[in-house]
Length: 97
Image 1 (cartoon, rainbow, N blue to C red):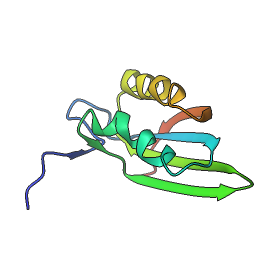
Image 2 (image 1 turned 45 degrees about the horizontal axis):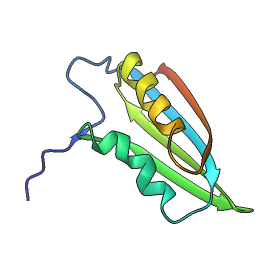
Image 3 (image 1 turned 180 degrees about the vertical axis):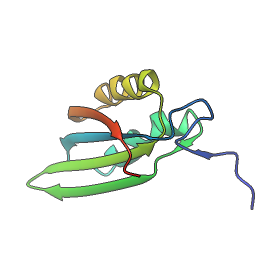
Image 4 (image 1 turned 30 degrees about the vertical axis):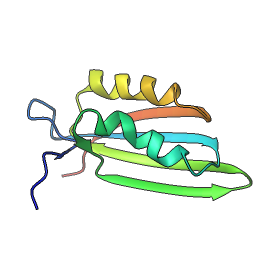
């Protein structure tokens, strides 16, 4: 089966950069697919996606290797507009060798 989706590493991105998105919101069955939508719209597949629900809140960590800083910032802004999202933190660091 062939797929046109790519990892979250566009060809002109810095391969050494790792971007992490930390999202907190109301625990709802529709929140996780909404968080993946900004990536899917760009044909990107995050390198890691981890979610944990506790006390009516959902905390999601999304990691993408090799995103350009401008694209990472834009996706962060898109995530902040998602229904039921309360907080989005975006951090970028150099990958370990």
